[in-house]
Length: 184
Image 1: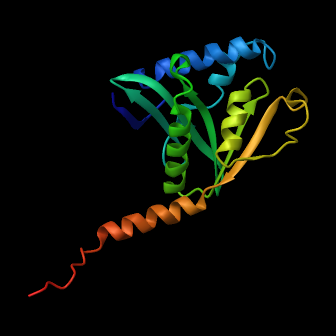
Image 2 (image 1 turned 90 degrees about the vertical axis):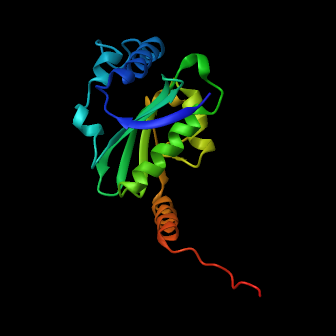
Image 3 (image 1 turned 120 degrees about the vertical axis):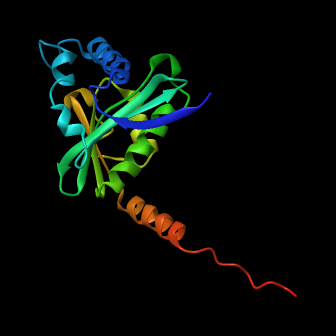
């Protein structure tokens, strides 16, 4: 069993399970709360190009050729990537897949020049709130208040250190190997 990340677009047929199940889940949790059109309107809110380099990206996580997770980011401002569509297949939850997706998106956003992540989740997604708080995101709302008063719950995280760490690894890998003096 091997999990593999790859970057593609929302139009890739392999993205269909992610998009379909995420749409279903949003409809199940929110119905027409945000819009009469339901989740389909949210899922089609941004053009495909928003999730393409150089300003965005779209990630899928596959296991044995099946899409089991994914996520995306788009340009928010010059230093901030906005994460969207973080998802794991419902029958495979509680295995750390969302963490894998989240961390991979952070590293890729840093590679693409972002130093901050902004994201929102819905008030009926306590699992997502717990994930973001556990992995260093700062809630930009009062976490003690009833989340429904906010409707969408914003978070941020600084990721500039990831770009520095990534650059250091690249620099080390480009240096010739240093050998210890040989003994005679």
